[in-house]
Structures are given as structure tokens and as C-alpha cells.
Image (cartoon, rainbow, N blue to C red):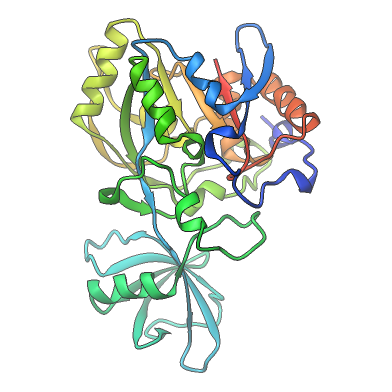
Length: 345
């Protein structure tokens, strides 16, 4: 399929630059896949669509201040964007995007106050293996020099409030590792989660550390020629058991965000039951994918011609998704990370 089939027009003023005043007061576009009908409401109405016995799968990863502003010995500014620990197994070595990348060389150090990070090996495309002097140095650099890794379409510097708002309320302090947020989860509040619990909706937590590849543009003509970057995912025993129990009693699985979808659909299934797993996932979901686990999807509005809108189109149908996006534009809904949400029945 041609990538142009996943394009749409979006006025720049609809790209949300700040979060909504209240998380659950974001607007919600509901799309019924069976009928094609849509309606627009507020996100706190989501509780009315889930039924007792359903399972709500959320990504509990926590974003850290991955964007580090340092300098070379010459005084020139250098940005290190931490991605994840490198595959070498050395906990002090990380994969990072370095900018500008052409001017630095292996063996050089990037300076952060009294700390430094050594550039070890260049992998290409701006990607480097870098090494911290110690774990305490890494934590100190992130704390003092790190910035919230807001996506490129938010055209402002990060603010102190972004530390809290570019994060879900169920982000787990023991699961720090994302450099981009699972933004569909932004709309949930603790009172809303309590309402869902009271209605006997089971919250099931998985983890996928979202990487910068989530914003990787599809730069090929045919979507089949695109690849997605691998990300670390975990679906533990308790989550697997909970999902299987929901399915056994006839409940539906509601995935919060494309990251939850990719984790669920990457999980092994044995004798009809989902199995726990942990490892890198690079599942690229496009039209023709047979969804084995996910019944319904809660997601934000995604960039045109991106792997994320392709995933949503695979779930709900390309034409219906694009028509729903056109309705959202006409209704002046807010788009992308800090924008409004979409529920697909």
C-alpha cells in the first residue's frame, strides 16, 4: 500500500502545545467499527463504554529526562538523547542520539558541569554508544542537565509542569525507561480509575519503554518496506493470568495506546492463552494484521503517514479512520501527544 493513503490535512493550530487543564476533560471521539458511526464526548465518559468484567490494559512505563544538553571541550553545545542501555550488557554504556553528530569523534567526552560522558562508538544515523563514568554520575547528569523529551511538534522548551503532565498517573517508579510517553494514558485520573474499579473493570499493567522510534517517519513509498525500531517490553505472569481470566469469562480487552497494542499482539499464545514474556519487540502492525488479543482501543490522534496511524487503520479500517480524523479536524479537536483522544469500539 502507498504511504500517501495514510495522509490527511491538519491545520497547525490544532497541534496541542500544552496539556488540557484537566486530564479527563479532554474530548473523546468514539468510533464504532461495526457501524462506522461516530460521536464526540468528554474523556471521563469512557467509563460508560466498558462493561463489568472487561480488562483495561495500560502501559506503566515512566518517562525520564532523556534529553541532555552538554558541551564539547571547545565550548560548542552538544545534545545527547538517551535511548536505552546498550546491548553490550555494561550498565554504564547507553545508546544515544548525538546532535550535531558529524563534528564529534570516538574518544571525545561531552561535558556536563563537573561530569562527563565518553563517546565510544558511532553506529550511524546519529546513534552512538556512550559511557558514563559511574551510575551516580549518570543519575546526577539526568537530574541536573536533563530535560523532558517533548516531541518535535511541541515547539517550546519543556516546563517544570511537563515533568508531571508528560507522564501517566499510573507510571511506575520501578519502570523508568521511556523517552516518549504512552500518551493515550494521559487522560486517566485517579478518580476515573477508581470509577472503573468500582464498575469491576480490571486494570492490567504491562510495560513497554517507548523509544524515539515512535516518531520515526515512514520515508518509503510502500508501507510494507518500512520497519519500526525495537523497544523493550514486559508482560509478566500476573498480567498474563489476568488477561486470560478476562477472556475466559467473556470480557473484552481494552488496550490503552498503541504501545499496549504492540505489547499484547507480540505476546506468545499457547493453547489459546497469552503467555508472559520479556524482551525487545519490533512488531509492525499494518492492514492485514490479525488481532489476536485486543478487542477495543483507546488512543490519541497520530501524525499523518506514520506507523501509528497505520496501526490504527489496521485495527479500524483505513477509510473509517481517516473519515473520523476529518470529523475531528472539523470539530477543532486537539491533536498529538497533548491532544484529545479516540475510542474505537
